[in-house]
Length: 563
Image (cartoon, rainbow, N blue to C red):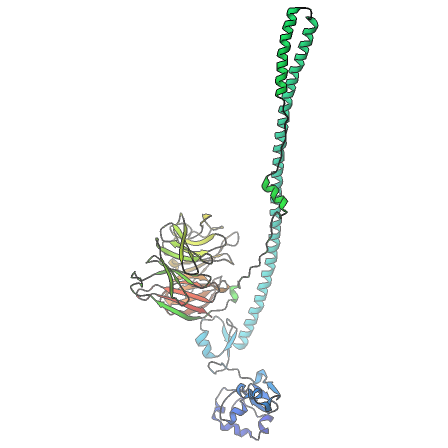
Protein backbone atom coordinates (compact mmCIF):
# COMPACT_ATOMS: atom_id res chain seq x y z
CA UNK A 1 0.00 0.00 0.00
CA UNK A 2 1.23 3.50 -0.81
CA UNK A 3 2.80 5.38 2.07
CA UNK A 4 0.35 7.55 3.94
CA UNK A 5 -2.82 5.55 3.06
CA UNK A 6 -4.59 3.61 5.75
CA UNK A 7 -7.41 1.07 5.50
CA UNK A 8 -10.61 2.25 7.18
CA UNK A 9 -13.96 0.69 7.90
CA UNK A 10 -15.38 2.71 5.02
CA UNK A 11 -12.89 1.09 2.63
CA UNK A 12 -14.10 -2.42 3.43
CA UNK A 13 -17.82 -1.82 3.40
CA UNK A 14 -17.87 -1.42 -0.36
CA UNK A 15 -16.55 -4.95 -0.80
CA UNK A 16 -13.01 -3.91 -1.68
CA UNK A 17 -10.02 -5.37 0.05
CA UNK A 18 -7.04 -3.26 1.12
CA UNK A 19 -4.87 -5.01 -1.47
CA UNK A 20 -7.17 -3.80 -4.22
CA UNK A 21 -5.89 -0.25 -3.67
CA UNK A 22 -2.40 -1.27 -4.76
CA UNK A 23 -3.55 -2.05 -8.28
CA UNK A 24 -3.22 1.65 -9.15
CA UNK A 25 0.39 2.51 -9.89
CA UNK A 26 -0.19 6.07 -8.68
CA UNK A 27 -0.50 4.73 -5.13
CA UNK A 28 3.21 4.11 -5.07
CA UNK A 29 4.28 7.67 -5.92
CA UNK A 30 6.60 8.72 -3.05
CA UNK A 31 5.65 11.68 -0.90
CA UNK A 32 1.89 11.54 -1.46
CA UNK A 33 -0.21 11.62 1.68
CA UNK A 34 -3.91 11.94 2.47
CA UNK A 35 -7.15 10.31 1.34
CA UNK A 36 -8.00 9.48 -2.25
CA UNK A 37 -11.44 10.03 -3.72
CA UNK A 38 -13.19 6.62 -3.72
CA UNK A 39 -15.38 7.19 -6.85
CA UNK A 40 -12.35 8.49 -8.77
CA UNK A 41 -10.26 5.52 -7.65
CA UNK A 42 -12.90 3.15 -9.06
CA UNK A 43 -12.65 4.95 -12.43
CA UNK A 44 -8.84 4.82 -12.44
CA UNK A 45 -8.35 8.51 -11.67
CA UNK A 46 -6.36 10.20 -8.96
CA UNK A 47 -8.01 12.99 -6.99
CA UNK A 48 -7.72 13.93 -3.37
CA UNK A 49 -10.74 13.67 -1.10
CA UNK A 50 -11.97 16.84 0.57
CA UNK A 51 -15.09 15.45 2.30
CA UNK A 52 -16.37 12.23 3.86
CA UNK A 53 -19.97 11.27 3.05
CA UNK A 54 -21.07 9.23 6.05
CA UNK A 55 -24.23 8.12 4.21
CA UNK A 56 -22.29 6.85 1.18
CA UNK A 57 -19.39 5.84 3.44
CA UNK A 58 -16.99 7.27 0.87
CA UNK A 59 -14.20 9.82 0.72
CA UNK A 60 -14.97 12.17 -2.16
CA UNK A 61 -13.22 14.95 -4.04
CA UNK A 62 -14.87 18.31 -4.61
CA UNK A 63 -16.20 17.35 -8.06
CA UNK A 64 -17.75 14.06 -6.90
CA UNK A 65 -19.25 15.67 -3.80
CA UNK A 66 -21.18 18.07 -6.09
CA UNK A 67 -23.50 15.15 -6.96
CA UNK A 68 -25.08 15.64 -3.55
CA UNK A 69 -26.56 18.93 -4.69
CA UNK A 70 -27.36 17.79 -8.25
CA UNK A 71 -28.93 14.40 -7.52
CA UNK A 72 -32.23 14.48 -5.62
CA UNK A 73 -31.59 10.99 -4.22
CA UNK A 74 -28.36 12.17 -2.56
CA UNK A 75 -29.78 15.40 -1.10
CA UNK A 76 -29.62 15.25 2.68
CA UNK A 77 -26.56 12.97 2.91
CA UNK A 78 -24.32 13.60 5.87
CA UNK A 79 -21.19 15.34 4.48
CA UNK A 80 -18.28 16.03 6.75
CA UNK A 81 -15.14 17.98 5.91
CA UNK A 82 -11.94 16.07 6.50
CA UNK A 83 -9.88 16.98 9.49
CA UNK A 84 -6.82 19.15 8.82
CA UNK A 85 -4.52 16.18 9.35
CA UNK A 86 -6.40 14.26 6.65
CA UNK A 87 -6.19 17.00 4.02
CA UNK A 88 -3.40 17.28 1.50
CA UNK A 89 -0.62 19.75 2.31
CA UNK A 90 0.75 20.24 -1.19
CA UNK A 91 1.47 23.19 -3.44
CA UNK A 92 -1.41 23.69 -5.87
CA UNK A 93 0.99 25.03 -8.52
CA UNK A 94 3.71 22.39 -8.39
CA UNK A 95 2.05 19.43 -6.59
CA UNK A 96 4.92 19.27 -4.10
CA UNK A 97 4.85 19.23 -0.32
CA UNK A 98 4.44 22.58 1.42
CA UNK A 99 7.55 22.35 3.55
CA UNK A 100 8.91 25.90 3.82
CA UNK A 101 7.52 29.17 5.12
CA UNK A 102 8.10 32.72 3.79
CA UNK A 103 7.84 35.14 6.69
CA UNK A 104 7.85 38.19 4.40
CA UNK A 105 4.67 37.01 2.62
CA UNK A 106 3.21 34.93 5.51
CA UNK A 107 2.61 31.83 3.39
CA UNK A 108 3.64 28.21 3.12
CA UNK A 109 5.22 27.12 -0.11
CA UNK A 110 7.13 24.27 -1.71
CA UNK A 111 10.81 24.27 -2.53
CA UNK A 112 10.19 25.19 -6.16
CA UNK A 113 8.07 28.20 -5.12
CA UNK A 114 10.89 29.25 -2.83
CA UNK A 115 13.35 29.29 -5.71
CA UNK A 116 10.99 30.92 -8.23
CA UNK A 117 9.13 33.50 -6.17
CA UNK A 118 10.89 34.02 -2.83
CA UNK A 119 14.57 34.20 -3.70
CA UNK A 120 14.74 37.88 -2.75
CA UNK A 121 12.78 37.45 0.50
CA UNK A 122 14.74 37.93 3.70
CA UNK A 123 13.12 35.18 5.83
CA UNK A 124 12.44 31.81 4.20
CA UNK A 125 12.74 28.86 6.60
CA UNK A 126 11.00 25.69 7.76
CA UNK A 127 7.35 25.96 8.64
CA UNK A 128 7.69 25.69 12.42
CA UNK A 129 10.47 28.28 12.66
CA UNK A 130 8.71 30.54 10.17
CA UNK A 131 5.51 30.48 12.16
CA UNK A 132 7.40 31.43 15.33
CA UNK A 133 9.11 34.33 13.56
CA UNK A 134 5.84 35.47 12.01
CA UNK A 135 4.11 35.31 15.39
CA UNK A 136 6.94 37.29 16.99
CA UNK A 137 6.63 39.87 14.21
CA UNK A 138 2.89 40.09 14.83
CA UNK A 139 3.46 40.66 18.54
CA UNK A 140 6.08 43.27 17.69
CA UNK A 141 3.64 44.98 15.37
CA UNK A 142 1.02 45.13 18.11
CA UNK A 143 3.56 46.67 20.49
CA UNK A 144 4.56 49.14 17.79
CA UNK A 145 0.93 50.19 17.29
CA UNK A 146 0.44 50.49 21.08
CA UNK A 147 3.44 52.80 21.35
CA UNK A 148 2.25 54.77 18.34
CA UNK A 149 -1.20 55.18 19.91
CA UNK A 150 0.36 56.47 23.11
CA UNK A 151 2.43 58.98 21.15
CA UNK A 152 -0.65 60.11 19.24
CA UNK A 153 -2.63 60.70 22.45
CA UNK A 154 0.26 62.73 23.81
CA UNK A 155 0.38 64.66 20.54
CA UNK A 156 -3.40 65.29 20.76
CA UNK A 157 -3.04 66.67 24.29
CA UNK A 158 -0.17 68.88 23.16
CA UNK A 159 -2.30 70.19 20.30
CA UNK A 160 -5.18 70.96 22.70
CA UNK A 161 -2.78 72.86 24.95
CA UNK A 162 -1.37 74.79 22.00
CA UNK A 163 -4.88 75.68 20.76
CA UNK A 164 -5.84 76.95 24.24
CA UNK A 165 -2.67 79.03 24.35
CA UNK A 166 -3.36 80.41 20.89
CA UNK A 167 -6.87 81.45 21.95
CA UNK A 168 -5.44 83.18 25.05
CA UNK A 169 -2.87 84.96 22.89
CA UNK A 170 -5.59 86.14 20.50
CA UNK A 171 -7.78 87.22 23.43
CA UNK A 172 -4.92 89.21 24.94
CA UNK A 173 -4.20 90.81 21.57
CA UNK A 174 -7.86 91.78 21.20
CA UNK A 175 -7.93 93.11 24.79
CA UNK A 176 -4.84 95.15 24.01
CA UNK A 177 -6.48 96.54 20.89
CA UNK A 178 -9.55 97.60 22.90
CA UNK A 179 -7.43 99.02 25.73
CA UNK A 180 -5.34 101.04 23.28
CA UNK A 181 -8.44 102.20 21.47
CA UNK A 182 -10.12 103.23 24.73
CA UNK A 183 -7.00 105.07 25.85
CA UNK A 184 -6.78 106.98 22.56
CA UNK A 185 -10.49 107.90 22.64
CA UNK A 186 -10.41 109.08 26.28
CA UNK A 187 -7.21 111.04 25.66
CA UNK A 188 -8.68 112.73 22.58
CA UNK A 189 -11.95 113.65 24.32
CA UNK A 190 -10.16 114.98 27.38
CA UNK A 191 -7.92 117.13 25.17
CA UNK A 192 -11.00 118.50 23.40
CA UNK A 193 -12.73 119.33 26.72
CA UNK A 194 -9.55 120.89 28.08
CA UNK A 195 -9.13 123.10 25.02
CA UNK A 196 -12.78 124.16 25.14
CA UNK A 197 -12.61 124.89 28.86
CA UNK A 198 -9.52 127.06 28.39
CA UNK A 199 -11.25 129.07 25.67
CA UNK A 200 -14.36 129.57 27.82
CA UNK A 201 -12.27 130.70 30.78
CA UNK A 202 -10.42 133.21 28.58
CA UNK A 203 -13.71 134.63 27.26
CA UNK A 204 -15.08 134.88 30.81
CA UNK A 205 -12.02 136.87 31.89
CA UNK A 206 -12.66 139.27 29.01
CA UNK A 207 -16.31 139.69 30.00
CA UNK A 208 -15.42 140.24 33.64
CA UNK A 209 -12.93 142.93 32.67
CA UNK A 210 -15.58 144.62 30.49
CA UNK A 211 -18.13 144.66 33.26
CA UNK A 212 -15.66 146.05 35.80
CA UNK A 213 -14.46 148.70 33.37
CA UNK A 214 -17.94 149.95 32.51
CA UNK A 215 -19.10 150.02 36.13
CA UNK A 216 -16.09 152.06 37.22
CA UNK A 217 -16.43 154.54 34.35
CA UNK A 218 -20.14 155.05 34.96
CA UNK A 219 -19.71 155.65 38.68
CA UNK A 220 -16.92 158.19 38.50
CA UNK A 221 -17.61 160.24 35.38
CA UNK A 222 -21.38 160.37 34.98
CA UNK A 223 -21.58 164.24 35.14
CA UNK A 224 -18.88 164.95 32.56
CA UNK A 225 -20.40 165.10 29.05
CA UNK A 226 -17.16 164.35 27.30
CA UNK A 227 -16.52 161.41 29.48
CA UNK A 228 -20.09 160.20 28.89
CA UNK A 229 -19.42 160.37 25.15
CA UNK A 230 -16.18 158.42 25.66
CA UNK A 231 -18.03 155.94 27.82
CA UNK A 232 -20.67 155.48 25.14
CA UNK A 233 -17.96 154.73 22.61
CA UNK A 234 -16.39 152.21 24.97
CA UNK A 235 -19.79 150.59 25.54
CA UNK A 236 -20.13 150.07 21.78
CA UNK A 237 -16.67 148.46 21.65
CA UNK A 238 -17.47 146.16 24.55
CA UNK A 239 -20.79 145.23 22.93
CA UNK A 240 -18.96 144.30 19.74
CA UNK A 241 -16.57 142.09 21.72
CA UNK A 242 -19.48 140.43 23.50
CA UNK A 243 -21.32 139.97 20.21
CA UNK A 244 -18.28 138.33 18.72
CA UNK A 245 -18.12 135.92 21.68
CA UNK A 246 -21.83 135.16 21.26
CA UNK A 247 -21.47 134.50 17.54
CA UNK A 248 -18.52 132.20 18.19
CA UNK A 249 -20.40 130.06 20.66
CA UNK A 250 -20.56 126.37 19.67
CA UNK A 251 -21.34 122.95 21.12
CA UNK A 252 -19.00 119.95 20.94
CA UNK A 253 -20.73 116.70 19.97
CA UNK A 254 -18.69 113.58 20.82
CA UNK A 255 -19.74 111.15 18.09
CA UNK A 256 -18.38 107.67 18.81
CA UNK A 257 -18.86 104.53 16.77
CA UNK A 258 -17.17 101.14 16.42
CA UNK A 259 -15.66 99.81 13.22
CA UNK A 260 -18.54 98.71 11.00
CA UNK A 261 -16.86 95.38 10.24
CA UNK A 262 -16.61 94.67 13.95
CA UNK A 263 -20.23 95.71 14.50
CA UNK A 264 -21.51 93.58 11.64
CA UNK A 265 -19.52 90.61 12.92
CA UNK A 266 -20.94 91.01 16.46
CA UNK A 267 -24.46 91.53 15.16
CA UNK A 268 -24.22 88.49 12.89
CA UNK A 269 -23.88 86.21 15.89
CA UNK A 270 -21.08 84.23 14.23
CA UNK A 271 -18.51 82.42 16.32
CA UNK A 272 -15.23 84.24 16.71
CA UNK A 273 -13.38 81.20 15.38
CA UNK A 274 -13.82 77.59 14.33
CA UNK A 275 -12.37 74.21 15.16
CA UNK A 276 -12.14 71.42 12.58
CA UNK A 277 -11.01 67.97 13.60
CA UNK A 278 -9.83 66.07 10.55
CA UNK A 279 -9.21 62.36 10.48
CA UNK A 280 -6.43 61.43 8.06
CA UNK A 281 -5.88 57.78 7.28
CA UNK A 282 -2.26 56.97 6.59
CA UNK A 283 -0.80 53.78 5.20
CA UNK A 284 1.35 51.53 7.34
CA UNK A 285 4.44 53.37 8.55
CA UNK A 286 6.36 50.55 10.16
CA UNK A 287 9.07 49.60 7.71
CA UNK A 288 9.63 46.35 9.61
CA UNK A 289 6.30 44.99 8.41
CA UNK A 290 6.22 46.12 4.79
CA UNK A 291 6.00 43.02 2.65
CA UNK A 292 8.07 42.61 -0.52
CA UNK A 293 6.33 43.50 -3.75
CA UNK A 294 6.49 41.61 -7.00
CA UNK A 295 6.14 43.27 -10.40
CA UNK A 296 3.92 42.16 -13.29
CA UNK A 297 4.51 43.90 -16.61
CA UNK A 298 1.36 45.54 -17.98
CA UNK A 299 2.63 47.58 -20.92
CA UNK A 300 5.89 48.55 -22.57
CA UNK A 301 6.70 51.32 -25.01
CA UNK A 302 9.84 51.44 -27.15
CA UNK A 303 11.00 54.79 -28.48
CA UNK A 304 12.48 54.91 -31.95
CA UNK A 305 16.12 55.82 -32.41
CA UNK A 306 14.91 58.88 -34.24
CA UNK A 307 12.12 60.29 -32.08
CA UNK A 308 8.52 59.74 -33.11
CA UNK A 309 8.19 63.47 -33.83
CA UNK A 310 11.40 63.64 -35.84
CA UNK A 311 13.42 64.72 -32.81
CA UNK A 312 16.32 63.06 -31.05
CA UNK A 313 15.80 59.79 -29.23
CA UNK A 314 14.06 60.91 -26.01
CA UNK A 315 15.58 60.95 -22.54
CA UNK A 316 12.85 60.61 -19.92
CA UNK A 317 14.35 62.47 -16.96
CA UNK A 318 11.20 62.75 -14.81
CA UNK A 319 8.05 60.67 -14.20
CA UNK A 320 4.94 60.86 -12.05
CA UNK A 321 1.27 59.82 -11.93
CA UNK A 322 -1.73 62.13 -11.90
CA UNK A 323 -4.35 61.12 -9.30
CA UNK A 324 -6.62 59.74 -12.05
CA UNK A 325 -3.88 57.31 -13.19
CA UNK A 326 -2.54 59.19 -16.20
CA UNK A 327 1.24 59.32 -16.48
CA UNK A 328 3.20 62.54 -16.93
CA UNK A 329 6.82 62.58 -18.12
CA UNK A 330 9.40 65.10 -19.29
CA UNK A 331 11.76 64.51 -22.21
CA UNK A 332 15.01 66.27 -21.34
CA UNK A 333 16.58 66.08 -24.79
CA UNK A 334 13.56 67.22 -26.80
CA UNK A 335 12.13 69.73 -24.27
CA UNK A 336 8.72 68.07 -24.10
CA UNK A 337 6.00 67.43 -21.53
CA UNK A 338 4.30 64.09 -22.32
CA UNK A 339 0.99 62.70 -21.05
CA UNK A 340 0.10 59.00 -21.53
CA UNK A 341 -2.58 56.59 -20.36
CA UNK A 342 -1.81 53.40 -18.43
CA UNK A 343 -1.28 51.52 -21.71
CA UNK A 344 1.43 54.13 -22.43
CA UNK A 345 -0.53 55.52 -25.39
CA UNK A 346 0.31 59.17 -26.01
CA UNK A 347 -2.52 61.51 -24.94
CA UNK A 348 -0.85 64.91 -25.23
CA UNK A 349 2.54 66.55 -25.86
CA UNK A 350 3.64 70.10 -25.11
CA UNK A 351 6.86 71.78 -26.28
CA UNK A 352 8.66 73.50 -23.42
CA UNK A 353 10.64 76.71 -23.74
CA UNK A 354 13.20 75.48 -21.19
CA UNK A 355 15.12 72.23 -20.71
CA UNK A 356 13.07 70.08 -18.29
CA UNK A 357 14.78 68.13 -15.53
CA UNK A 358 12.07 66.56 -13.35
CA UNK A 359 8.28 66.62 -12.88
CA UNK A 360 5.98 66.19 -9.89
CA UNK A 361 2.20 66.24 -9.49
CA UNK A 362 1.07 69.00 -7.12
CA UNK A 363 -2.73 68.59 -7.20
CA UNK A 364 -5.49 66.83 -9.14
CA UNK A 365 -4.48 68.34 -12.48
CA UNK A 366 -1.38 70.44 -11.79
CA UNK A 367 2.28 69.59 -12.22
CA UNK A 368 5.56 71.40 -11.50
CA UNK A 369 8.67 71.00 -13.67
CA UNK A 370 12.23 71.90 -12.72
CA UNK A 371 14.42 73.29 -15.46
CA UNK A 372 18.12 72.86 -16.05
CA UNK A 373 20.21 75.97 -15.37
CA UNK A 374 17.21 78.20 -16.06
CA UNK A 375 16.51 79.44 -12.55
CA UNK A 376 12.77 78.78 -12.60
CA UNK A 377 10.13 76.12 -11.95
CA UNK A 378 7.37 75.72 -14.56
CA UNK A 379 3.73 75.04 -13.69
CA UNK A 380 1.07 73.46 -15.87
CA UNK A 381 -2.55 72.43 -15.61
CA UNK A 382 -3.42 69.17 -17.41
CA UNK A 383 -7.20 69.05 -17.84
CA UNK A 384 -9.29 65.92 -17.97
CA UNK A 385 -9.52 66.28 -21.75
CA UNK A 386 -5.66 66.33 -21.86
CA UNK A 387 -5.51 70.02 -22.71
CA UNK A 388 -2.24 71.41 -21.35
CA UNK A 389 -2.38 74.99 -20.01
CA UNK A 390 0.77 76.79 -18.94
CA UNK A 391 0.50 78.60 -15.59
CA UNK A 392 2.79 81.33 -14.22
CA UNK A 393 6.24 79.99 -13.35
CA UNK A 394 8.33 81.19 -10.44
CA UNK A 395 11.98 82.14 -10.44
CA UNK A 396 14.57 80.72 -8.05
CA UNK A 397 17.97 81.86 -6.89
CA UNK A 398 19.35 78.32 -7.18
CA UNK A 399 19.32 75.60 -9.82
CA UNK A 400 17.15 72.62 -8.90
CA UNK A 401 17.08 69.15 -10.45
CA UNK A 402 15.03 66.42 -8.77
CA UNK A 403 11.83 67.54 -6.99
CA UNK A 404 9.14 66.06 -4.71
CA UNK A 405 6.21 67.50 -2.77
CA UNK A 406 6.09 68.47 0.89
CA UNK A 407 3.22 69.64 3.12
CA UNK A 408 1.96 73.13 2.46
CA UNK A 409 3.36 75.01 -0.49
CA UNK A 410 6.87 73.55 -0.22
CA UNK A 411 8.93 71.31 -2.49
CA UNK A 412 11.94 69.21 -1.53
CA UNK A 413 14.54 69.54 -4.28
CA UNK A 414 18.15 68.65 -4.99
CA UNK A 415 20.40 71.57 -5.85
CA UNK A 416 23.92 71.79 -7.16
CA UNK A 417 26.71 74.31 -6.70
CA UNK A 418 25.39 74.95 -3.20
CA UNK A 419 26.70 73.96 0.22
CA UNK A 420 23.54 71.94 1.03
CA UNK A 421 22.53 69.18 -1.43
CA UNK A 422 18.80 69.45 -0.69
CA UNK A 423 16.71 72.58 -0.07
CA UNK A 424 13.10 73.65 0.40
CA UNK A 425 11.60 75.82 -2.32
CA UNK A 426 8.18 77.47 -2.69
CA UNK A 427 6.55 79.70 -5.24
CA UNK A 428 5.11 81.92 -2.50
CA UNK A 429 7.48 81.43 0.45
CA UNK A 430 10.83 81.49 -1.34
CA UNK A 431 13.82 79.24 -0.70
CA UNK A 432 15.22 78.05 2.60
CA UNK A 433 17.23 75.28 4.24
CA UNK A 434 15.82 72.42 6.23
CA UNK A 435 15.69 73.07 9.96
CA UNK A 436 17.66 71.49 11.48
CA UNK A 437 20.21 71.74 8.69
CA UNK A 438 21.15 68.68 6.62
CA UNK A 439 24.80 67.63 6.39
CA UNK A 440 26.69 69.95 4.06
CA UNK A 441 27.94 68.59 0.73
CA UNK A 442 28.21 70.51 -2.51
CA UNK A 443 27.05 68.42 -5.46
CA UNK A 444 27.77 68.64 -9.13
CA UNK A 445 25.11 68.62 -11.82
CA UNK A 446 23.34 65.25 -12.26
CA UNK A 447 25.00 63.74 -9.19
CA UNK A 448 22.03 63.05 -6.90
CA UNK A 449 18.25 62.63 -6.68
CA UNK A 450 15.92 62.97 -3.74
CA UNK A 451 12.43 62.23 -2.46
CA UNK A 452 10.53 63.11 0.72
CA UNK A 453 8.60 60.69 3.00
CA UNK A 454 5.86 62.97 4.30
CA UNK A 455 4.45 60.66 7.00
CA UNK A 456 7.87 60.42 8.63
CA UNK A 457 9.53 63.74 7.67
CA UNK A 458 12.46 61.92 6.09
CA UNK A 459 14.56 63.29 3.24
CA UNK A 460 15.95 60.46 1.08
CA UNK A 461 19.03 61.47 -0.91
CA UNK A 462 20.54 59.14 -3.52
CA UNK A 463 24.18 60.17 -4.00
CA UNK A 464 25.62 58.78 -7.24
CA UNK A 465 29.14 59.90 -6.37
CA UNK A 466 29.57 57.38 -3.53
CA UNK A 467 26.79 54.89 -4.35
CA UNK A 468 24.99 55.74 -1.08
CA UNK A 469 21.37 56.08 0.00
CA UNK A 470 21.01 58.64 2.80
CA UNK A 471 17.95 58.79 5.06
CA UNK A 472 17.82 62.18 6.85
CA UNK A 473 15.16 62.31 9.59
CA UNK A 474 14.28 66.00 10.07
CA UNK A 475 11.32 65.53 12.42
CA UNK A 476 13.18 66.53 15.61
CA UNK A 477 15.58 69.20 16.80
CA UNK A 478 18.55 67.40 15.23
CA UNK A 479 18.99 65.53 11.97
CA UNK A 480 19.27 61.75 12.32
CA UNK A 481 21.12 60.37 9.30
CA UNK A 482 21.29 56.73 8.21
CA UNK A 483 23.56 55.86 5.29
CA UNK A 484 22.87 52.64 3.41
CA UNK A 485 24.83 50.77 0.77
CA UNK A 486 23.69 47.38 -0.53
CA UNK A 487 25.38 44.87 -2.77
CA UNK A 488 22.10 44.49 -4.67
CA UNK A 489 22.10 48.22 -5.50
CA UNK A 490 24.66 49.11 -8.13
CA UNK A 491 24.60 52.76 -9.27
CA UNK A 492 21.27 53.87 -7.77
CA UNK A 493 19.41 56.39 -9.92
CA UNK A 494 15.69 57.14 -9.66
CA UNK A 495 13.84 57.07 -6.33
CA UNK A 496 10.23 57.43 -5.16
CA UNK A 497 8.02 56.66 -2.16
CA UNK A 498 5.65 53.68 -2.39
CA UNK A 499 3.00 51.99 -0.23
CA UNK A 500 3.79 51.71 3.46
CA UNK A 501 6.33 54.53 3.14
CA UNK A 502 8.78 52.12 1.53
CA UNK A 503 11.29 53.51 -0.95
CA UNK A 504 11.76 52.23 -4.51
CA UNK A 505 15.21 52.75 -6.05
CA UNK A 506 16.39 52.08 -9.61
CA UNK A 507 19.53 49.92 -9.52
CA UNK A 508 21.04 50.76 -12.89
CA UNK A 509 23.69 48.06 -13.21
CA UNK A 510 21.52 45.19 -11.94
CA UNK A 511 18.46 46.18 -14.04
CA UNK A 512 16.30 46.04 -10.93
CA UNK A 513 13.89 48.01 -8.79
CA UNK A 514 14.98 47.65 -5.17
CA UNK A 515 12.54 48.09 -2.30
CA UNK A 516 13.77 49.57 1.01
CA UNK A 517 12.07 50.29 4.30
CA UNK A 518 11.97 53.93 5.54
CA UNK A 519 15.01 53.10 7.67
CA UNK A 520 16.98 51.63 4.77
CA UNK A 521 16.38 47.92 5.41
CA UNK A 522 16.46 45.88 2.21
CA UNK A 523 13.00 44.41 1.66
CA UNK A 524 13.16 43.01 -1.86
CA UNK A 525 14.41 43.40 -5.40
CA UNK A 526 12.66 42.76 -8.71
CA UNK A 527 14.15 42.62 -12.19
CA UNK A 528 12.63 44.85 -14.86
CA UNK A 529 12.52 44.06 -18.55
CA UNK A 530 14.85 46.87 -19.58
CA UNK A 531 18.50 47.78 -19.24
CA UNK A 532 19.74 50.58 -16.98
CA UNK A 533 16.52 51.80 -15.34
CA UNK A 534 16.75 55.50 -14.55
CA UNK A 535 13.43 57.03 -13.37
CA UNK A 536 10.63 55.48 -11.31
CA UNK A 537 7.25 56.59 -9.93
CA UNK A 538 4.37 54.90 -8.08
CA UNK A 539 0.68 55.69 -8.65
CA UNK A 540 -1.26 57.54 -5.96
CA UNK A 541 -3.25 54.41 -5.07
CA UNK A 542 -0.04 52.36 -4.74
CA UNK A 543 -0.99 49.74 -7.32
CA UNK A 544 1.13 50.71 -10.34
CA UNK A 545 4.79 51.47 -10.98
CA UNK A 546 6.22 53.18 -14.04
CA UNK A 547 9.90 53.12 -14.97
CA UNK A 548 12.09 54.47 -17.78
CA UNK A 549 15.70 53.91 -18.80
CA UNK A 550 18.57 55.53 -20.63
CA UNK A 551 20.01 53.22 -23.29
CA UNK A 552 20.90 54.68 -26.66
CA UNK A 553 18.90 52.93 -29.34
CA UNK A 554 16.76 51.03 -26.83
CA UNK A 555 14.92 53.64 -24.75
CA UNK A 556 11.85 52.19 -23.01
CA UNK A 557 8.95 53.23 -20.83
CA UNK A 558 7.21 50.43 -18.90
CA UNK A 559 4.34 50.16 -16.43
CA UNK A 560 4.04 47.35 -13.89
CA UNK A 561 1.43 46.16 -11.45
CA UNK A 562 2.61 46.05 -7.83
CA UNK A 563 1.65 42.65 -6.42
